[in-house]
Image (tube, rainbow over all chains, first blue to last red; front, side):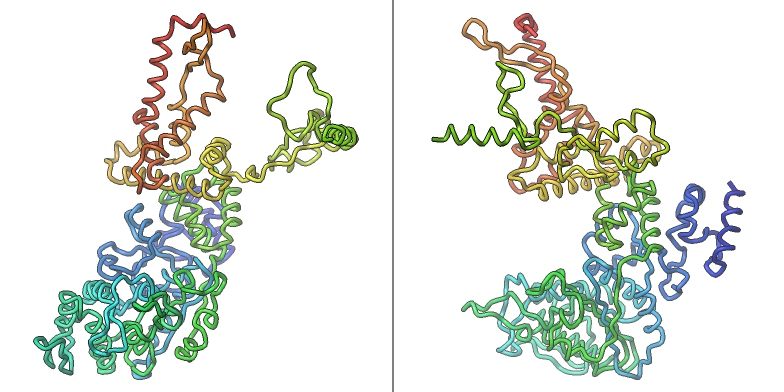
Length: 396
Length: 242
C-alpha cells in the first residue's frame, strides 16, 4: 500500500512539481485519473481540503471542497442557500463547497479593498446552473469569518412576484409595502448579524405612528424588533436599517457587505397588480426602492457583490445570461461601472473533483457510474454544468 | 369502390421491400398483433462493445453475422433505446407503463425523482443507524427497485375458464413476462389510486417500493391474496387443458 503511494507521488512529482500540497493529503485530481487505489487508502484526500478558512484559500485549493461547519451555516445562511444544495446538505450531514476561480478572484479583490474609496460593485454572471449563487455564498462565508456586517438578500425576485398582501406605504403614499417579505428578511438579518445590532446606534429620530416612535441613539436591534413584531411597519424598518447602515459604514466601526442574488429583479418588471389591475413598476415598491439606493456606489467602507439570475426572472428569455440582456438599459446604467466576473462550467479538473466528492460520500450508487465509460457519459450529458451534473447524479 | 383500390395498393406494395405482404403467412390463422415490418426484418442491436471490436478479434460466426447484416434489413431502433451505460430495460418498461398520453418526458422525470427520493430516504436511515446495521441498509435505488418488483411477482395466477355455462377461476402457471407485467401493473395502479390527492407520485412510489423491498405493503399483500385464491381453488386445476 505504501509502495503504491510512494510510486504515485514520484510519478506526480515528475509531471507537475508545483501542485504538490503539504500535509497528509495525496496530490489532487491527477491522482484520480492515474489510480483508483488512492481513494481506498485516504478516502477524503482527493476532492477535499483541510483548509476551512476562506481567507486562506489560494489557487492551489482550486477544485477542492472545503467543509463549512453546520453551526456556521445556521447563523450565516439562514436563508441564502439554493434549495437543492440544502437538500444535499441534509442528506450528507455536511456542507462542502468547491473552491473555484471566480470566487478566488473575488476573494483576492475583497482582501485588497481600500475602504476609503467608494464601494466597488462586483457582478457574477453566467449560464444557468454554473454556480453563481454558491460562489456568492463562499464570499459571504469569507466576509462573515472576517467579521463584516452581511446584508444578504437571498433572491430579489421573490420581492417582485407572488406577493399576497400589498399595503399602501404610510411613509410615501405612492409606494407599496410588503409586510411578509420584509419581516421574514428582518428575522434572518437578525440571526446573521446578532452582535452588530446592539453596537450600532441610529442617528435620527423615526416616528412609526401617532403613538410609537424611536429616539435618536437607540440601537439598531430595537428597529429590527419593531419591524418583526409590528409587521405593518416591517418595510419601513427595513428602509431605516438600510439607510443607517449606509450612513454609518464610512465611519469605520464595521465593514459592510451588500450581497444581492438576482439583482436583475430590481430593474425588470413585476407581476404585481394594484386593485384596479394596473401593473406596478418595481420603483413603486418600497423594498426595491430602498435596495436600489443601497446598491449605488455613493458610500464607502465595504463592498457590493451581486448575482444575475435568469431562473427566477420575469419576462426574460431562457437563454439570456449576459448583464446587458438581464439588467436592461436602466439597470446597466444604474450599475455602471461594475466589475463583471463570469462563472463558467466545470473544467475537467473540477469535474473530476466533483465526481470524486460524490463517490467519497457514496452518492453515486450505480455500478457503472464508477467506470471510465460512466464518467465520460456524465461529462457528456451534463457538459460540465454543475447544476445538471448534480441532477444527473441524484438518481444514479 | 374501396376494394379494387385496396387490391391495387396491395399489388404495388408487394414490389416494395418490407411492407407486409397481402398473402397470410399461415393460412387459416389471422394475425391479431401486426407490425409494419415483415418477417425478414431483424431487431436492432445497440451495443457499443459489439461494434467496437476490431475486425481481427471476430470469430467466424461473428464475421458471418456481420456480412449477413449488410444485406438484411433491420428495424429502426426506438428512440428510448440508447447505448447509455446507465440504461436498464426494466426501468424503461416501467417508465413506458407509467406514461400517459405519450408524455414520456413526464414519466421519465417521475421515475428519476422516485429513484432520488428512494436514495435520500435510505441515506437518512443509513446516517441514523448504528455502525453494525449500516452494512445491512441498501442504498442503491436500482437494486431496491429490482428486488421490490421481484417480491411483487406472483408465482401462480388465475384464469377464467368457461365450463358448463359458468366461469370458474382456475389456477394457472404464468410466464415470466406475465409475472413481470403484473408486478409493474399492480405497483402503478396502487400508487395512482390509493394516495392522498395532494401527495405526488414520486413520494408515494418511493414509499411503496421501499415497503415491497421489505416484503411488506399493499402490493405484496395483493400478491399473497392471489396466491391464497389460487390455493383455495386448487380443486379446479384439472379444468385447465394446457
